[in-house]
Image (tube, rainbow, N blue to C red):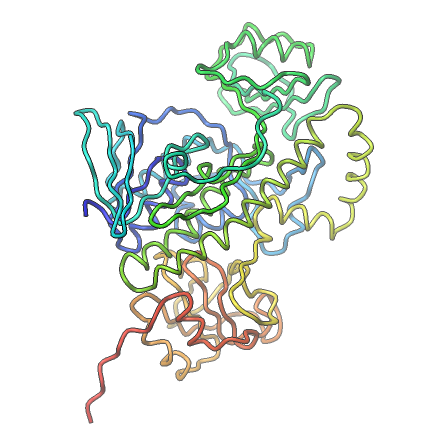
Length: 496
């Protein structure tokens, strides 16, 4: 094998997956057809859940000073995300190009073999691995791998060549996105519905503004080149009355509102993540975030299977967990598109939604949906509200040293958190100590209070989701450990 895993695509999903695999000790090659990063940034910032993910891997300091905000929207209706208890705020004004650069530096520092200018031509799977034909700067060559993961975007070669079904709806309209220098544009950070469409604008600094233009009646077009800036400026003037034709375009792009999702995220030894698996309207900035979280869900599972610590069936939970998340993503982005991009006929619905959002239960529901904080995985039966949910940030003391549940996840290992000084419980997990951090800790939260609500022990998966609690889970700790981390290793017998 040339590598245990080959990842195709060096966008956020591919780079995050490579880093996750390397943290687990898996050798990985990343193939990217472009010779260099484009520097373009469709996404600006990331959601609260992705901020948590980056924090759980110790990546946030690499971003330096970042601007956060509790304000967001659903289909153009303002939503206050501070209603979500104990959550990070979302991050604003971080270009996707910067996020990708940070992820690339992190993955490369962990030993990822990243090959730019290398394009996958075809691949062939057999029972033992996958042969991948690659066109590189010096000609065509073949690599062999145990698993191939397509993170190569909405027009994925891996998805098409792998025969994945990709049902859904095609784009019904075309929209423009541009970063423009030298124009004084009124900020419209969550967008504004106007007589003939929708416009959005936000300052990026250094005299550059990000604009998005959606003009009603603009049909989708399959372009081979970006639209001319003059076309964008003309549409902007028609909708806002402002002439920005004198501006300097930093970059220009067009996009649509398709809604498609593959029917299966895994076919044998070939898997898909990110836009390769789902495409949708970029409403609320959810696309990059869902892609990163696909990779965090997949990475530790794939590494465990490659290392022989877990059966191949563990990879089936990647589909069973992330496919419903993707389906829900398509639902909410499509709903937002109809609310925000339709004409006056949708105004009564907007007005009703504006009233409903004033109720805390509705605001919390929509904020959880857009942020990704509502996600709950099926990890087994139980009655604790945290079961299957993300592990909240919890300040801890371990061996007289202050730490946190977030810091304990930096190595991307599972964590068994003993909050009651139960030596027998810790001893029962020793057979998984090669893939699990077993930690006795104290917390400032009083028993029966706080986010753990009286739990004395918590098992957290490497992706930060709670897999088991005591009390609160019906399954035994042993059953949960075997389900998520494979069989226990045989411990040496004690003499005497």
